[in-house]
Image 1 (cartoon, rainbow, N blue to C red):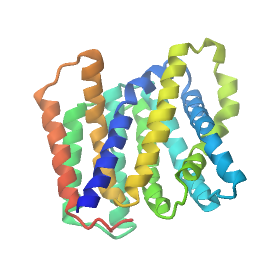
Image 2 (cartoon, rainbow, N blue to C red):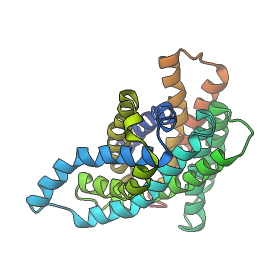
Image 3 (cartoon, rainbow, N blue to C red):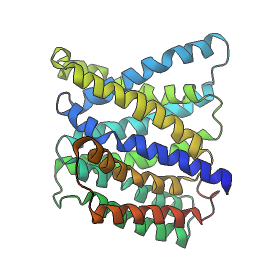
Image 4 (tube, one colour):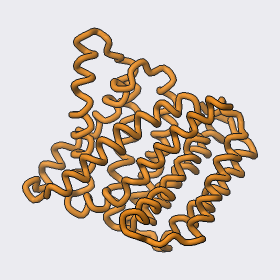
Amino acid sequence: MGSRLLYYVVLVFVAVLWGSSFVFIKFSVEVVSGFGYTFYRMLFAVALLTPFVLYRLFTGLFDSAGFFGGVVTGVAYLFGLLLQGIGTRYTTPSTSAFITGLNTVHVHVYCAFVEKSYGLSLLASLILALLGLYMVTLPSGDFGFGELMVFAGSIAWGAQIVLVSRYSKNVKSFSDFLYGMFIPSLSLAPITLASDNISSVGFGTWLYIFYLAAACSIAASLLQVIGQRHVNPAIASTIYLLEPLFAFLFSVAIYGEEIDVRRVAGGALITLAIYVASKSNSNTCS
């Protein structure tokens, strides 16, 4: 249980990094298109990883199987980023956070009906987590274009979580896997160059996107792969619901937003959900 707890903590740090992303995504997509945001974020990420991958390539250590698994996972990652970015431009960060969190439902449904590996503890954790998520985010009741895009993105995020669990167990090089995961998003280059005026993008926006690439893509994805090698996707997706709670805490620290009982109670429910989920068989749905 001790080693498993360590990997739970690793995934909590993933939620911390992802939680820090929402405000920067909102700032970025107000200046560049959703296509541009996704492309430039992944361009920075690929550029940062290229020296490591080139070294492994020239020394004969390149993990082609891991790279391929990364590319497959990267297709889901591309649509998750893109649809979330497009949708967040037309909705509030709290609503985006809530709908994005529905990826947990998709993962649990996959485990129950595709892998045929599910139990009452996971179902109870899902109900508790969704209630906690609602209390933390308190989304608006509107459902328009932005909300639809973010919901479609949540399906892609659910697929990404499942694919990371599938391919991470045999990864020999994290850098090669992550490189493959980020590559598909570079296919957005033509539409980005056609639709965005790069000269109008200010230094602050570039700084936001660089942070999203380095911290929320490379660092968070590295921790995600490490953690999900040992934690099944249903439990992992429940842990990731701490993301909007950390997003709120960042807002408190940066903007002085007041802490209220409702959000604290919501965070407590999500934490309880993680505990309940941890009582399930950690080797199922993997």
